[in-house]
Amino acid sequence: MTSRAAAAVLVGAAWLLRGPLEASMALHMALQLPLIVVGGALAGAGRAGLGRWDAHGLAGLSWLLLASAYWMVPRALEQALTLPLAELGKFASLFLAGFLLPGALARAAAVIQLFFLGNFCAMMAIAGMLYQDLPQRLCNAYTLDDQVITGVGLVVASLGIAAAWCIWQLPALGGYAGPERRNAR
Image (cartoon, rainbow, N blue to C red; front, top):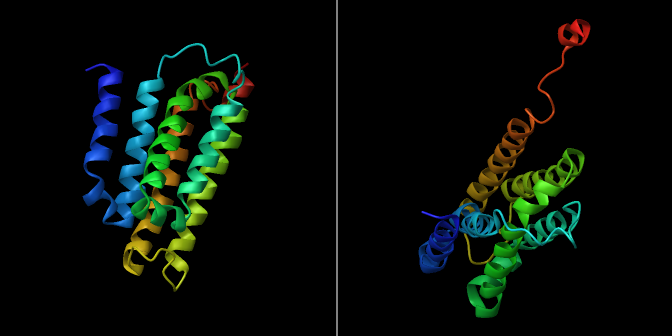
């Protein structure tokens, strides 16, 4: 299966299974939204030509932060449930974030990636902790228990993304250069 076909399957599944996925805040945020982003990333993988306006990956990574921050706001999720235009905006903005992500990561230096993905993971973890700790419902469409489960999912996802980035970057950074390796040089 090509990456375009896989992207179509993921985004199509996110669209066709909207009802069951959006019935739970946890499934909405921890499954449907990432399906759309990953679908966009698969569609954008290997695309050339965007480097002219995104030379260091700043535009693509900025869009990732903006789109993800917006869709972590409970009111935005609620609007996506009730307003068809908001639902289309959710799919379009997250697909675009995913589409731009592979090229942005390829063009960005490790320190730029660390800055943006560090902010992304911190934002997700803080939102997750707020979802868990606040005694009131943040979204009228979902229960307080679902909000707590979503908060746990956001914290776990932020840790997973951070760990995956570190593992991915380890070979590029030359691995660990502890005292024994530095003295051997």
